[in-house]
Image 1 (cartoon, one colour):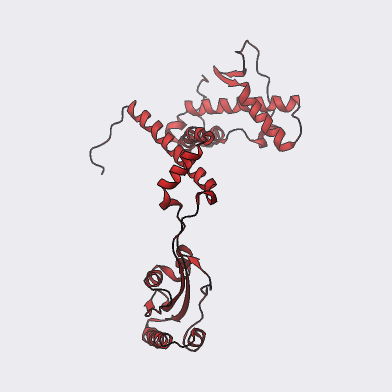
Image 2 (cartoon, helix red, strand yellow):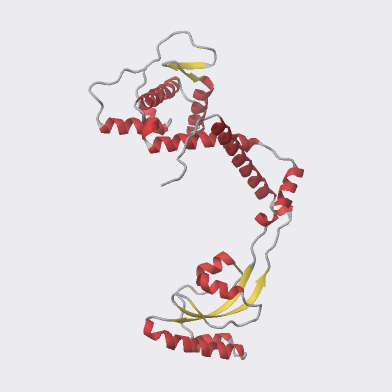
Length: 298
């Protein structure tokens, strides 16, 4: 273990240590001048020992391979040594950070450590290969998840209310437009004579409900969803004015065939397997830990 520095380190070096402990091995550190690790017998498969913590050859080789993949050139002896020196530097920084209590006191370090643990647990499930029967059973059990939402094509006339005192006039125009449209007058003529130009005109296309909501807002969307195809709805007020809608076409929610969404099913199966693995791991940790909480939170 390193002896505590004297005098007490300033706040800036502490922040630097925290940053170094969390940063990992970076290509930008290639330029650091490394020092040869002193000799001594090491276990097979180990390239260095730092205060008793071992750096294994496969970890070091993985970083070297990554550099060679990025540069598309073989790593020379000097670069390979610098990679090892950088790993030693990192290990020293991590050990010093632990000594200084950063794991307990620095929220960012704690969050990085927790995220690294989560990733190490979940990544093991990414290599799992569910059988075709498992995937099909999962697809059939989760039809609601894989069902594509319905879509709606709607025509729209908008009546802007630029100021509170103009609400009645806009409402009157909207009522007149609704009367004329319900009587069968051409939509474009009524819109041109009575309506106002929208900032984002509603496309003449089948839209998912989430996209339609972006154009008209939640209140107007609820009014649209109550209409049958071909029906002209009564004026509905939103935050910007009045709307008159007609549903031109409605497409019901649809469950795609398994073959069309097989990759999506597989990805969701793996994601949920990772969630289960993490939950099981956390349950085991809690079972073997002593956790005490207050009976009622303040």
